[in-house]
Image (cartoon, rainbow, N blue to C red; front, top):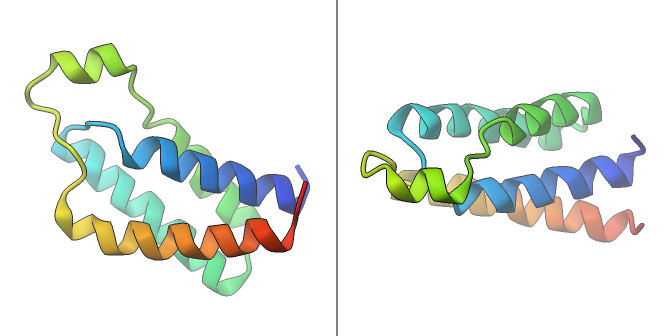
Length: 99
């Protein structure tokens, strides 16, 4: 996977997972992945970004399953700032590496 593809995959995955409903444990895993991705972006480690993005993708839950479980919630407010910061950084990187 080239660097531009890695950034696009990370950006798309972040947006897809951030809007779904998950359990509290799922949100903790999400937070760990977002922190790992942010660290990778800040340090320029593309391989680490790829690993964290792939982990984040494993948190994908089918919409019908998430909607049917009342224990699943939307993204906690405490994660919004970290998510938005990472989304902005990834958008800038995607813009720098067009397809």
